[in-house]
Length: 158
Figure (spheres, rainbow, N blue to C red):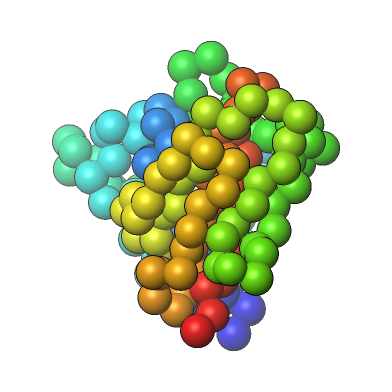
């Protein structure tokens, strides 16, 4: 069960990162080596059994045992684009009207909701976002502020 959850989470993460405009995938291995692949060169990413399979647009295929992967990092042209709540001071909650409310001292540039395939579902430039129309399921909220970007997973119930 734990492995299935990990594989589902990684699949969602790959979809979301591509939607965020990251450029490279870095696979860090247990032997302290790493493999960097441009996302634009990846034709297919597959999780098969206990392996991560990467097929590039040139047809080259590489397999990485999941037990040998210590971390996976996504990079853009200027480096790691990783923010935490503490870094950009963002608080997200849902009010009784079915709206996602984002509170932050930073200027909100955009709130975007993605489904688990990475497809944009809705977007606003306000600090409130109505999610009543969403079907039950898991979604990712991307908060873009003048300080950075943070993503939060949320589950829409009834």
